[in-house]
Image 1 (cartoon, rainbow, N blue to C red):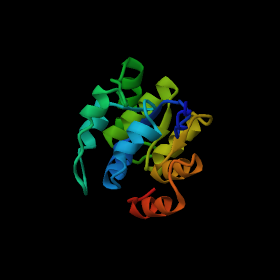
Image 2: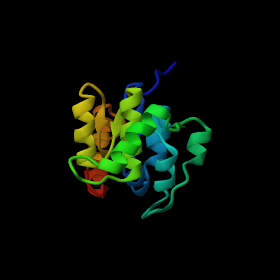
Image 3: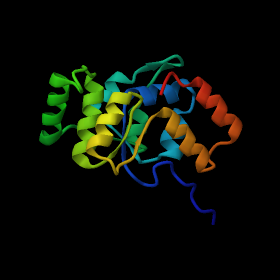
Length: 166
């Protein structure tokens, strides 16, 4: 019997923001990300599902991934809502942040999950509060995928060139 492939987050749950989803959809790798590389390790909020609706490759429909359990979707509880509203109202370091980013931060911090965000200020805030948790951007996901031998060198280069920013 063949052992299962390693996953990029090693079984840890990671809250993923909309730009990461958009990036991997744009790279035509969203299916691999959620069904193979990080199956059942990705959690989003309804706000992220509503934000991650289009990439250059067209409409993004996360409903199948959610219904088959490849992506977990969680609503914000009371503790998360308090953090969410605080981040929405006050931002980070006097910089406003989007609702999706605030929701990701609130959920990851409250539940002790990891975080995947392409916004540097969001990652810095998360690392400050949760220094021992997974904190990555799209480029880091590509690097980890290569380190786990889930993709080759050429695919790593090709994916890296296709990322919007990290």
